[in-house]
Image 1: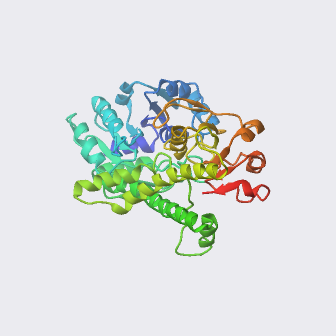
Image 2: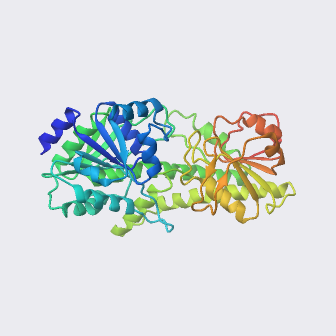
Image 3: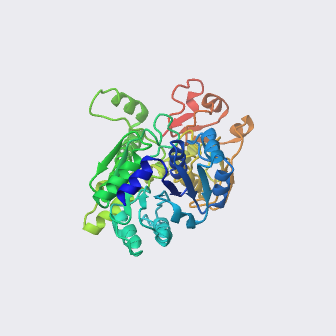
Length: 438
């Protein structure tokens, strides 16, 4: 089985199924198609399926012309039916792994997809989980379900975990040149997965098990979360000491060894950093181990979001304006600059909290014209144009995401007050008295 599968992979005749056509799945499907594989994407979102089949791109990291060419050539198609899995030689799972309201892992998407794969599992297939998750998921959740088919792992089918490493908006590092970690349930599973990923990725790094690959990914993002929490805590201390945290961080960054620069902000967002540490902390409790350092970092980063709200309220009060009834313009709601992704963005909590306090909140984001109602937002919000009238009529403008295509000098010129959570106004001198940095 392993030799037949490797031969198909090496000859590019293996059919690939990518389950989940989001920020991870679609770029992955396109990369595999570009080197000659035929790929079918499976997604329960009919709109995504239709867009792919029409060659219409919805992920910024994918080039429009690449998607169109692959669809036109028949190398890439999409469907909402799992029945196509029976023809696939390689099945890649790229589904969301969010948190519940109580900050516990929600792996229901993985479970549901695995149950579908089980229905069509046949000898000779490789199943690879790319979704970020807690260590043990591949072998404790996916493997038992797949073996209910009567097939044996490592002999009849192959199972591996190779966590996604996607940085939306990053022009330098893409799916092709970001190194890939892969762990197989058995040596044959590892061999199959390594052979497959080596076709399109410049460097594939083998580890001894899926659990090692799983914990590697959550550690990578926990590392970032902890260091961001450290600088966010420094930000709050510097505020009390009347020091500019941005100046402190940049000065420390001049040291040529022993420090990596992280910047403060209004909290953390995205599909990894706010979530992965809680996956690791949750799993640790199974072993009677409390990850105090990690959980504290999560608390500090959440605190930074509410600190930003408090700073807006404080600035309004200092200028004889109550937050209740105040008109607050939020600049940027994406979780980081120059992307169209608002998942777990601190801006959502900031907007919601200000609304709870009675403020009239507007937002402008050149990448996100509409915010759909979802936790914590209670109803849809439409973005506003960044006009002089909007800026001048706002009691406070809060820069939450520092998109590079916004003219901050112009904003400061026409704003009454500016709360800058990203140091976007660093080089502005005219109107500096209006700017308050967090």
